Length: 180
Image 1 (cartoon, rainbow, N blue to C red):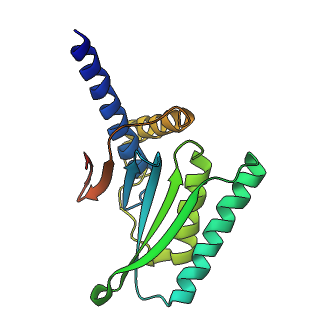
Image 2: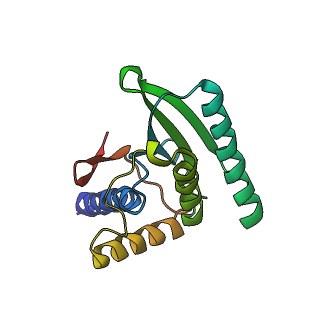
Image 3: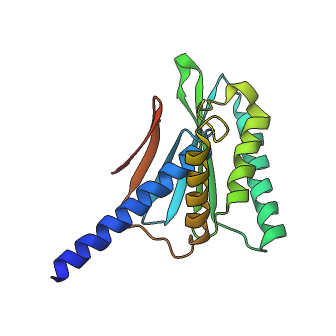
């Protein structure tokens, strides 16, 4: 009997984690993939850029993004959240760059996600890979449910601590989430 309850809780937690990452990707088409690390209780948001960028340009954007997030939190809640930003060239021959933005889940907010996505979009424009399926182009009911689910999960972020290492990514017209 105890094993049954434990298994049910694990399945419920697994489902909630999958839904969290899927909703995040559905609501933010600018994010190409997202990883949840249970050791750090952190998300890594990945953004992919087309084109070649000198290291100074990538460093300048990293500084802008970092300062913008710090300023946002200083104004909103007076905290200084854990943040790590890395950029790397992932395919020199195809001229692709990937940015990894790692944030602790407990203090992550919807407005901060919107700020991050907007900074990438405004700074890199058409060079940012953005999925064509956005909240504006999806069926209205589906988009509303995904947005509401994401808001609920972020509202409970301080209590969230999934045990699995999960990865969510885009695959064609779908969002796929799996545990690693």
